[in-house]
Amino acid sequence: MSATDLSTVRPASGGATDALRRSNLATVLGLVHREGALSRSELTHRTGLNRSTVGDLVSELTGLGLVEVDEAPAAGGRGRPSPLVRAADNVAAIAINPEVDAVIVGLVGLGGRVLKRVRIETPSARSAAQTVTLASAGIAGMLAGETGIRIVGLGVAVPGQVRLSDGMVREATHFGWVDEPLAELLEQATGHRVWAANAAVLGLRAESAFGAGRGVDDLVYMIGGASGIGGGGISGGRLLTGAAGYAGEFGHTFVRSDGRQCSCGSRGCLEAEVTQAELLAAVGLASADAASLAERLVAADDRAALAEVARAYEYVRIAARNAVNVFNPSVVVLGGFLAALYRGATAHGAPDLLGEVVHSSREGVTVVEAELGTDQLLIGAAELVFAELIADPARALAA
Image 1 (cartoon, helix red, strand yellow):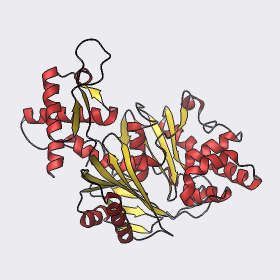
Image 2 (image 1 turned 90 degrees about the vertical axis):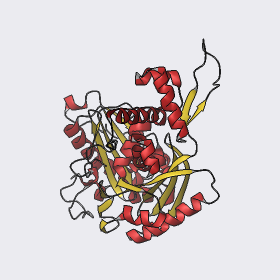
Image 3 (image 1 turned 45 degrees about the horizontal axis):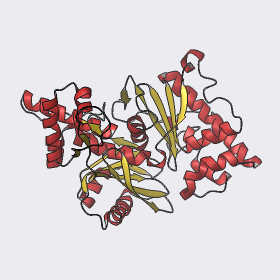
Image 4 (image 1 turned 120 degrees about the vertical axis):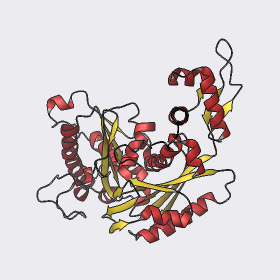
């Protein structure tokens, strides 16, 4: 998989006609995956291909079991109704997101639909081997009794630096992992093909495809979770991954000169100064109740809780200022507990998140919360799997 564009997989060798057919299959399947059910006439319009070619492509994708065609859609328009093409309901990817306090396992269908979700609570961080054991048990339990589901691969959203070429976790400091072959271990344990990447980058991919970043060519994404803070950026419509896929480590933005020791070895990093655990504790919530954090922060009236919100928010303002000044986005998307903190802080009259950004850079920039909520990392992990499936459906299914 390319280190510069996670959504691109080079087609297999073959003649020009075969390569064009594969490219057209990818275009049609990608549209149905991202946009939902589309009529065959709409596919013809969007692809610029002729009707017979689109019909042949849809027939091939139907034969592969990747799309379904409704030959008799509801009437309502003039003329002969065009059949609707939708992603097959039974095609899915397994998604895994290990956190320091849990292992989350999901089943995600084509189209970014989270079909099932299992959270396995753990008392503390654990080894890569223990994570594989817990994830495998979660997968087995989740799939028990399921019939007809077609698993096309397994994607992992890792809160750490992951080498895209082989899923090697180079560093996951909150777990104490260094050079752990997580993708290989999961492949051996589950029998599925496995892809892995940085969790925050995958959250960005999910929001860009299906959520708050949809259709936005220049954005900055920041997300906070139990394992820290990360993020990523899109510039000119391209995901910024860096030379080896490690870009977007906003959690290690320097925000305080006399700051706390960070797990990375430095001091004053954003994720050392702003943690989900402290915000949860401030309003009396457990880690499993993180989905309620925004509501509780908005309703908070305790002086200590409000002081913690103000303190944490000020450090996030510094990191956001740096990100916008450097990347000049049109949208800033906040996910996880950072979205909760933003909502809580603004409800209590906090200053503009981008109020100290260079004036020209902040003109027209909007700050929004991620739309996919707790599903964003699972959807992003599944996108790793679906990217290869979409790029060359027949070859991916054969593999």
